[in-house]
Length: 371
Ligand SMILES: Nc1ncnc2c1ncn2[C@@H]1O[C@H](COP(=O)(O)OP(=O)(O)OP(=O)(O)O)[C@@H](O)[C@H]1O
Ligand SMILES: [Mg+2]
Image 1 (cartoon, protein in one colour):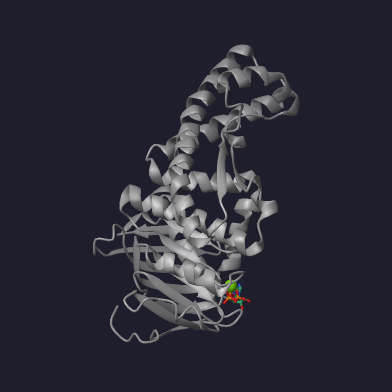
Image 2: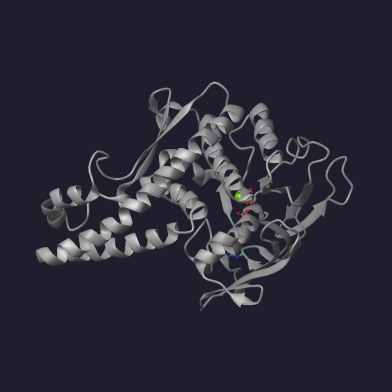
């Protein structure tokens, strides 16, 4: 997936900007508050129909305007074909998505545009709640198996029904048996896909972390949300009285987690801030690398403030990895000094200066050619 043209209107301080991105590295630099993260937010809205900063889309619409719009020409398979993708959202109204003249649902949109974000929230993979790590695993499940979304939706629909029955405080035994059987029918294969994804990701992650952060090994351990030695049906049966008292289901894929250990300790406790940034970045880069191996398709990376927390050597290693992958990257930074210099001369690079909501393209150092 490649974005070859991008237009953003009425999104935060971006009134009307047009960009012709490079197919590989796009560097956006500018002062605090100039609109860099807003541009990444625009691409995220285009790819997923939602912001990574807020759930309140009204905050994203530029003050004093009625509707935001993000429009792009994209090349979905990286084959040279050009298709129009546009989203708009009015203050009062629904999100509208149009792709090649047709409207598009959220799952179709997400599979069209595989997006990965690396920003200060990415630390939550180590430090945050299990739901963030489940989302991480589910990104992989969704993009690596076409059946994943049906299982995920089915499981969450049945779980909601089971929980509302538990809240009523009384369930007929036959009704319970039916719901539990249906829950298990979704939960077991969903967990299999999650576990298989983590297994496939592990060696890719080890390899990338080895390049980004020498001398630190981090072990990934997936737990599916119930006692690994037993079937979910057994566990549901056994925990039923407790679930009834609590009014919710205490075991199952809704409790799955991915844990990280560095040198035998919880990675969130053990690692320094910069080491954590490299570990969470390696996780996201591993997702893109595995996706590419499985599908031969590139991802779009949105990397906000890449240099923060990193020393020059690690910053260079991070950039080296990005330029050796097939992905299209949108990278922001305040000072373009180091980041505009680190790329090999033949790396397709576009440099954009962001200034009070306007974006202008400047030539990359030593590189005036058409890229
Ligand atoms: N709804 C809105 N309407 C108009 N302007 C807005 C709106 N929401 C935010 N802004 C402004 O848009 C600007 C863009 O902020 P953004 O977060 O994109 O900056 P940035 O370049 O990423 O800065 P930093 O380097 O500090 O991260 C800010 O000045 C902010 O005050
Ligand atoms: Mg920012």
